[in-house]
Image 1 (tube, rainbow, N blue to C red):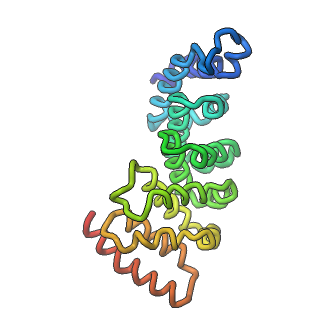
Image 2 (image 1 turned 30 degrees about the vertical axis):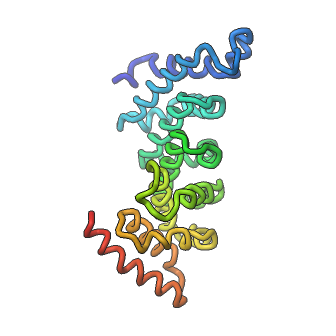
Image 3 (image 1 turned 180 degrees about the vertical axis):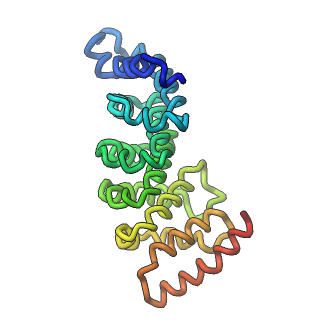
Length: 253
């Protein structure tokens, strides 16, 4: 109901647009001291309200399609380093959570590079977590696999997983878990398999196959998909390992 209320979206978009750092400098240069806009709080609250609206199931598609909204959100991510940026990334996550949005989000051409950039450049931030989660959801649609590879989404997420280590019980937060999910989703695409194999995905996930942990189930599925065209003995042994781990892990669920 709030989304459909006349003028609400336009008003919120106006707030985040007019309080952008560049707009603030142009209009009130004497008020922009120490790199912090006086309208920062208004911007955060507007982004928070929009993020809450985007959570609503019925709002995900019309909000994504709303004229000028995505441009405004991407501008926040480009120009902000604080809470407003995190909320903006949450909105992109909400868009990706709607399956009917997943291909159009990638086809826009400007959202995917932004998600990859935040995943690559940010360190241990909530914004990075949101973007990694969004990339994982976008990978659910097989049509997105090649664009995800071409935009460079694979290596930042593999780096995050490598840094997290091979023991899921020691992972901090859920970011690494989403990375495993991303690899599992990507591995289901025939067109992505060779790139995943060459990038070392199997070697990265192999240590998880020996653990009694639910992350091992996702890893086993990813490895099985990635190796489905291989015929050598080494791959056979690896697949036997996944064959053993899957029933063991499912019994824990």
